[in-house]
Image 1: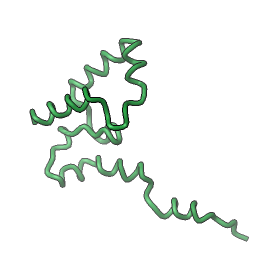
Image 2: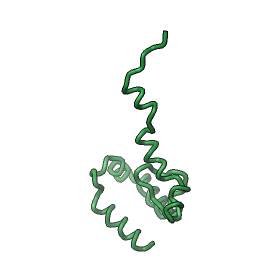
Image 3: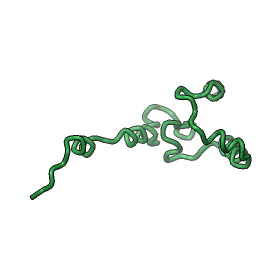
Image 4: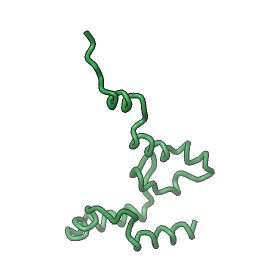
Length: 97
């Protein structure tokens, strides 16, 4: 006798998980299909996926890791829509592309 599987379990087996779907957007071939160089993309929704962080970001991470207070602060959850400082820097980055 085969055990019964709940409808919820069947739904999750048959569908792609939201995380897997988000990560698929960061696939370099998908980014190229959009006409964008994957090396110029920072994919905040899924972390670093299939490409390297820019040197400037690596340097910023290093300064955070070396400072206990910064490390604690930046390890917390940001505001849902992101901080104004982060939005400003992203706008500046995009303007320079």
